Image (cartoon, rainbow, N blue to C red):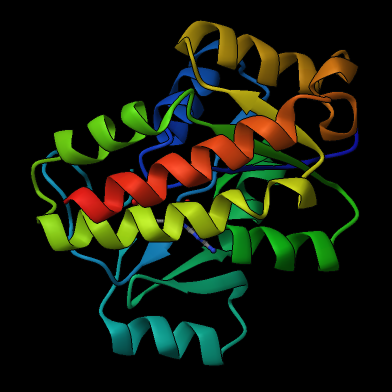
Length: 213
Ligand code: 5GP
């Protein structure tokens, strides 16, 4: 079996972390790539489970050592996929799920032929804002920054292979599972004619929502 890098990207608050967790419950042939990050731990997050929380110096040391498959800066913090994580998952005979930003997805796309790239879209800007503000650890300034960034990220949808709208968690998970099985041609970006319109509307609404904060 060819091992795959299943890349999931979405604007922050797009719900992809929840999707990834649910996907891992239902698919035993998948392993979650625990990223390294310099950002602070949020409520309920566990080191080594949600992220490997590192100091900046340690992150930079690993980066200089060539230990990252990809890395990116997001909101003034560093994030990266450790090669060791992918070795571990492939060693267990599983495909790897990477919850990474558009910059990281580009690096994976350019360097590996075994990636499957899925963009998870929020159903509306309101839902995105709701999810972002529900994380009460974020201050308004940070929420505004993430919304502005969300608009830029949405502009990158066309670079991905597939798009899934996260209207309903179970449906989104089913659709991603079908993509993995090669049974979801209708989710191909190129096959979704109404996608550019949806993305444009989302971008417009997200910008408006950011202005109101
Ligand atoms: P958060 O701070 O909300 O957990 O994540 C912020 C952004 O960083 C999200 O878009 C998330 O997908 C991305 N991210 C998380 N881990 C990685 C990683 O290892 N590499 C890259 N490039 N982005 C990551």
